[in-house]
Amino acid sequence: MHLLSKAEEIVHFLEWAEENGMLFEYDGSKHKIRITYEDARIAELRLPILAEYIPETGQLKFEEKNYILCMVRAGMAAVGYFENGINISHKVFRAYMVRKKQGKSQIKYLKTKGKSRAGSRVRLGESESFFNQINDRIASYMNSYHVDHIGYSCSKTLWPFLFTPDSALQKNKNLLYKIPFHIQQPTYDKLLEINRLIHLAAIKVEESEKAHFATYFKEDSDSSQEDELW
Image (cartoon, rainbow, N blue to C red; front, side, top):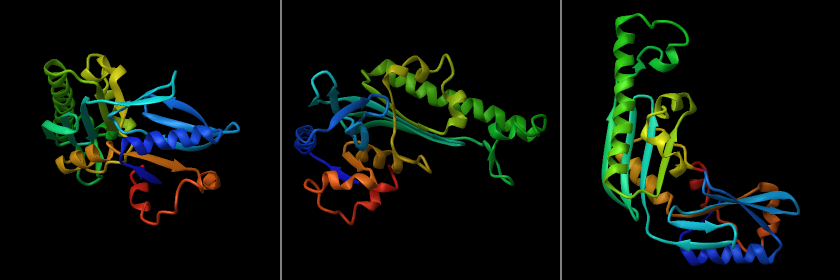
């Protein structure tokens, strides 16, 4: 992977790719440009959150944006509001949702047994409150600020509880942007780290297609650090 930090670097790369016969396909939900050559996908360009790609013209524009980042795991979540990359407000949520012996969230445990036990009822109540608080916080930001994007990271197991019909996320699904990094612990520090990373562009080249980019990139032995986050 190769990271691009400046707007002019991204623009120059796209111009070079177009001049070399490559075609672009934009995926708005992931804010990525898939790059193909002779009908084969050879690379992906993940755009920074402040970049806007216009498929009709193939142009990029950069502008200030407001956005929410929402990172959720069973029993822990971090939600923050950002203006042009600056964190204005944030909240970290915790809930008693994990059964200690099994290390399994109560939501997953419902598929087996234990629903009627007192501890299970407590965990279910905590789980409901947990997701309500997350959506209340997002709704508060939506009501207080103009929001361009809502970046989210959440395992598919938890989607039905986060994206309920009346939730702030579901009502604003046209603004959703899937955070393209794995997040193990959604802490405040991780919220700030993810904010830094989504301001960078990243080019991921298929292993078998590196020859296409040999004249553009030099081998970067330090790029593996970011590969784990892709």
